[in-house]
Amino acid sequence: VGDFVAIDAGWRHSIALRHDGSIACWGDNDDGQAPPDGIQGDFVAIAAGGIHSLAIRRNGSIACWGRNNDGQAPPDGIQGDFVAIAAGDFHSLALQRDGNIAC
Image (cartoon, rainbow, N blue to C red):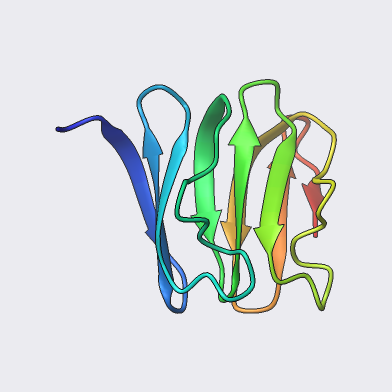
């Protein structure tokens, strides 16, 4: 059923944003980067990194999951008003609505 609106792929995992705002995950989940039951929430954007993933909630805050050995995916997420995210192998960054960048 075609209910996906965005996709991304990490090193050995993939994530997809559903129309309802939840996230589906596939692949390697050794570090919690792709929970088989997915991630529930009201998300508007996703990014898959090397061994972590992140997503922007409709309220502009960021949820993170997976490996966080370099601070790339803080388990408590990041509060703020974000409009874009990106995830690399061992880092992440986010664009705030005011044009500032958080890394």
